[in-house]
Length: 428
Image (cartoon, rainbow, N blue to C red; front, side, top):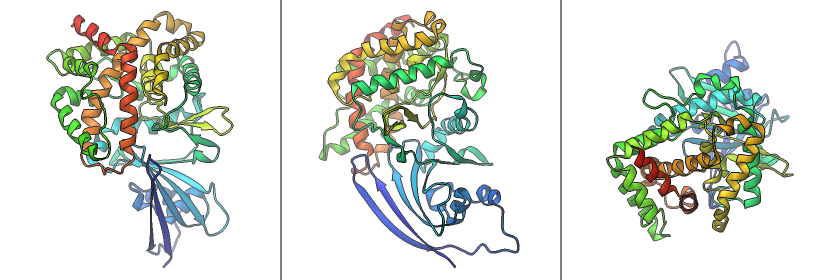
């Protein structure tokens, strides 16, 4: 029986590397009639990385794969992401590497992310060729018939040959942020009024809300139990032996926001915000263009966008939250947020003047400010808290938390998030 040597490398956000090598023996699959390529692909695709076989990889890449090395990308929160460097027995097949995206290994995270998984698979299957933004080439998508939006495998090209990944921990410069905003503005403008938006899976309305943002599930969890903020702070405090992390536990602004959304009027304030979002003009939004989901071509000619799990139709204020809210490296650059938003808005206006006639610059700024104010404590408490309660202290996601927390708090200060949420409170 053939033996396979697999080297697994985990690269953390801080650059540290852990490598293990395992040699296994694959069972013989000899039969009277060899299965077709499609039969192998559809019956032997992996739900977890340890289910990957050279037989399946050979069928996928149309070349005999004798082994492979695995690099784990730790920046994923909802999914598992791996880069496989393939060892061909003969001629190289489709590509020397392949990226596999698989569901989270954590039951709670995976089950709460089903809607996100569905969106990304539908985007690559139905819309990828229709958008002007560059996206990775997809080699194949497989879904479990019994749970099609919970267990899946997406095989895609490795973008690193022609592009450099942006890094959320390191952050980006203000000039690069400005270019990214311009590209997103053109994308948002081109889909205003498009028939593409009629696709049911892009709809963000739910039985409970006329508009439910991509983080709405986490907000709902927080509203049911606002006390989950305390376990989050306890989870973060585990890191004190290395570094005390400022997540706003002593910030007057964040405490004021928490006082409102965790108070008796909290659900009404959130619902009022969702009603406002539903009343805004909608277009196609990626919704999660933080640095880790963007690659920059090595010649710096354009960007490539990944992770379409949050995409849908919505107001452009919701595009700005992740794209601009916590990506710039230099905290002093956040004093230019209003000018950056205005530049983005003017570019959208050039391509979709009718949309901007119904959606003012002030409304866009307010929507971004309130969205971040609601998202920040809800996501941290409902998602980050349980995850970081058991997260090893040397895991790269700690560095991500540190970077995002500082930048997001500064964005909320610059945009007047407390005042915007208080204005909403006064309406309920």
